[in-house]
Image (cartoon, rainbow, N blue to C red; front, side):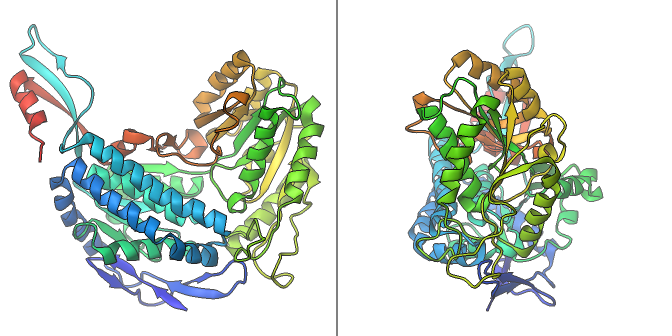
Length: 520
């Protein structure tokens, strides 16, 4: 069993005292331990803030080259990184690649953005504006790096991709990072950071790493710092309410719970390309990463006349899923990541039971391939149907974070679908499937205020559509209300969390010269 160390103050430190154990979720064997006891969080922050000076002196082009080197390193180490993703995350090889390639791909994307911005240190935000009777009095908004630290707290389900998508935006913007992955599945992120530090890609202080709890770190943040958090809405609300966070106006971004929906329009015929796309996407989102994706579908809105066809198609798909030891080649779905996740999924299924009928999978009990009965944190795919969605509450409020989805029949009317979708109070992602352009437009505009990303599936894009649960760096990731109210990624929009928008006002030639004094 190895000990995961924290990288703070320019050195690796093994925490003192009690340590958490990291296990293989398929075998329940302890494989590592981690803790941050004795780590001086104030010193870690000060070291990172000092490291921000070197980053801010670089241009966007130069910082982009740092990200490119990180992307290439992770891609080159892909095969060796797959092993900790399987051993500690319960990922199949395919799921591990999804996480690791998502990390390197996001870093590479932001490297290209840096190259496009070029040898500049300041970004203009929009056009300048005449403020007086003549153009002499001029105003111009500019974006400059904040002089603090980006503390990035990531969730257990994507330790690689979650680390990279946050770090890419912060580092390109010119802010140093302290990454804090969920301890239970931190091994993959640890290996990534270990490789980056070993390769000496980044300036001293630009990247820190906490293997274990955050201690009093968050209470030490100040007005120039940023906290980016992915996790439960309950924890996100707690962090926002911390006296030090609120009192010092620490900038906070939260990406939280989401009962995402997939909506099938009534014009879709069984067996059509759009119908098949809907079924394929639902099956993938239910089983990839064992359904442990914040963007996975939890509710499937299906017109009542199509419920039978959808159930038959999904039962056939889900029946082919092979659950077991993710290290085995024939296995297509591994276990949940932790014992707590297993308890939560079982409790969630029990709460849903009063409002649903089981279509496939029963209570999720399954005999895992390649392991003794009762070993590991396994749940098989579970498809449910809610026959009275208007009266249901748990179906629209409870996110069961596993391979579980509920069919919600509706009358086919656009208004009914929109009303049912929005009942959750905010989502990260929702997808609508159909070929009637007017109906799709009405659905999209009705749902858009309640979701961060809306995927529109149709026959036109069936052959080239990416899985709706894949978070793309070009588009924002986040959502309103229950989903946290934040935004990450979205191309250059992803940098805004780490930049200060400042209005320059004065003599036009002087204002413009200040804005131009940024080339390397």
